[in-house]
Amino acid sequence: MKEPPQLICIIGPDGTGKTTQARLLIERLRGMGYTYEYRWMRFHHFISLPVLGLARILRLTEVQTLPSGNKIGYHYFYKSKLISTLYPITLYLDSLIAMIFKIYIPLRIQKKRIVCDRFVHDTLVDLAIDLDDEGFIDSKTAKRFLSLAPKDCLVILLLAPYEKIKNRREDLKFDKSLKKRIEIYTKLSKRFPEIKIINASLDVESIYEQILGLVVKDNDIKAPS
Image 1 (cartoon, helix red, strand yellow):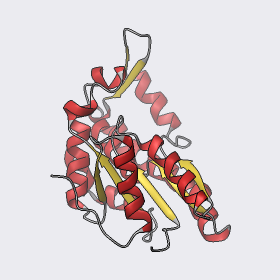
Image 2 (tube, one colour):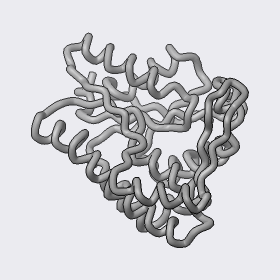
Image 3 (cartoon, helix red, strand yellow):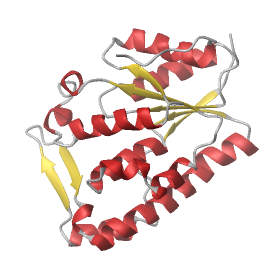
């Protein structure tokens, strides 16, 4: 058995069980004598708030109310050159602030161990959707976002086909961007082979065992076909 990484990040589209797996992993690692803390690393808005406010004024956002009363939000930032320029810049600064206080300081100064539910990779996919640009993950801006991730972190992508995910929750069934998100995550995994992929179509226990294998065992796990 190998020493688990100090930082473990579980990424992927909604409906793949990231939060469940992060909680299970932390519980198991604590039982093995490793104290890990949970971090949710999506939607950090500070400097970007005024840009989001302007986008709403310009009607570049949409909120869809589902039959249950739940809501899904969409951004159409690609329709405005101003917003599509400002938002990635301000969101990068927000991500940097969040990384400093939620990741860098706990890791490097406090010597803590962390399991992240989502990470900067998910932010890139969100941006690619908001900007309607699947090639965004190959941009210079995307590289700046990815440079925020410590080089020694383990990134695990939970991924499943659209037909497997969409019926897991009501919001996923109605989410018109879900299929494209899955496509961009797939492209991201091919662009960055250091990302470990696990088939999220499997049952919770099988997924958990594969994640644990990546974290504490020497054997590697290949991406699902």
